[in-house]
Amino acid sequence: MAPAAAQASDCTGTNLQPTAANVAQVSAATLCLINEQRAIAGLPALARQGDLDRSSSAFAELMVDQRFFAHESPDGHTLTYRLRNVNYIPVASGWEWTVGENIGWAEYYLATPAQMVKAWMASSGHRANILSRNFSDIGVGIDAKSPLSAATGATYVTDFGRRTYHEEPLSSQPLTGTSIGQAAISHMGIQMRILLDRRVKLQLSVRRLAQPGLAAHTLGTKTLVGRPGNNAITIKRMGAHRITTGRYRVTIKAKGSQLIKQTVTVTY
Image 1 (cartoon, rainbow, N blue to C red):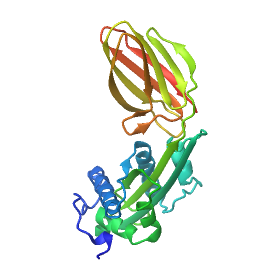
Image 2 (image 1 turned 45 degrees about the vertical axis):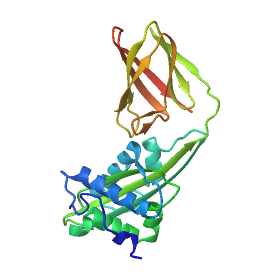
Image 3 (image 1 turned 120 degrees about the horizontal axis):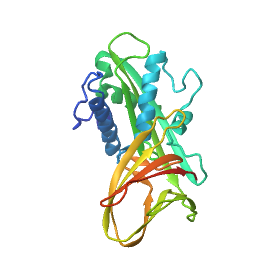
Image 4 (image 1 turned 120 degrees about the vertical axis):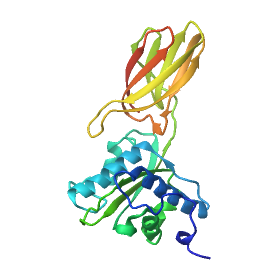
């Protein structure tokens, strides 16, 4: 049987030379190739995760800017530090987590996704990360430059992880009242209790506020249908983002009602 890395691929963009203009396509091709290798091994696909994406991209850029190639930055920051900094690794009790990282850089045709994943699969440590049953999430970061060479090339970072929460009984602490409800701290995300006098469509938007080392960014929006009476809403995830510790701005829009903005601090 031929080695897994030699199998024909159904992924697109695998032979692209990374540039600033095609980094998104190259990242997608890299993830596709990694998940192909997992499928060959009978493993589930890894899901792209926003916090890991930000960490991977920032670290690839840092290696290029500061001209080093290592899992630890010159200032001593490790993978664990970086993933705590983007809120992927929870600081609270009740969570189990495991993380890993592959890095690579190459020049010219060796810098394509196909060649990079092939090289990783030929290395026992990198292959172990790609085929680990312990990981469910992945972030892919690519800088279209080399960290140690002026030649045309690219720097790749893939951060792997899994988080599992052993939920405890819900314990809520009221924060502040609003005209239609109340926000509370929850062991699993943001809890909203909204009292409505009619059936109405609610549009919720969640924005994670800025904190040291992490810029503010919108996590996403979701639409719910509220019914007359007390509506309990739990926001554990917005898109690819899990609600972890930090400060969030929740905006609620409802037709015929005043716009509500609520700042919530989530702790576990």
